Image 1 (cartoon, rainbow, N blue to C red):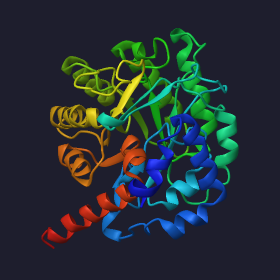
Image 2: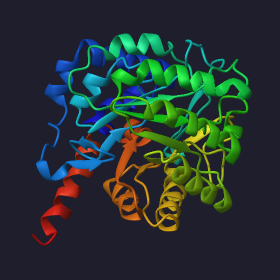
Image 3: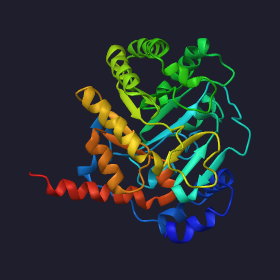
Length: 340
């Protein structure tokens, strides 16, 4: 129903305007989703325990879709095993100038240069206080006006304020849309940042998993550095990957727009990064695989490459909520073929 009836209508309008319209509809008319969309797949065999948390299924929603923790309950009702909110910053900020979100229909892709637009961490906390049982990841970043030498303070503020209300944290230093942010992926500043957060974490009565979200554009040498940093700082794992700056093989008219590219063009590279990290680290830490998942086959490939969990974003927009069920049904088929 989504691809045949709903998507053709939504895709006639500006992507960002449609995003907020869809949010409003899901918030105010969530009962319609339960009537017209397939019932989520629920099965104990889909449950996963990763970095000490129990996920009802391994298919999550990536950060960037529900930046402000507005719709986590309704999105969870669509069948997601977990919801990642953000990226959140200490203070609310408008992000980059519009127009900043572009569909690449011929490539089943999206380019965005949103720039961490969000209401700020305090607003998200107030909404998260109402959460009952949705497993939430908190994706945190720095404000645009904060220089890199002071960036650690922004992450510390977000970490402290979100701590009681999220189940795990994601440190985002890989968005291409905040000036100089990716410089924080360099070994020295990244080790300092993660080490600082881990120190704060260790002082809590019940520490929570901290993950690092990385770019797909890192070299093999940089990926080896990431493995060393994860082991040294003892963070819980990695999310691979964020959007790419590559424009290789694109055919859509919007291919030259500035920003991060997501969707099918990222499928192969994100899986390569997952496999590299998994093999070179000897599966030393869990990986959440994200990037170009548009089919159940794409999801299985990432899990087979070494991911423990996966996340959807652009594939969710192009394929609709049915994609969650397709992936979980395929996982159940695989489970039924395993020796008991």
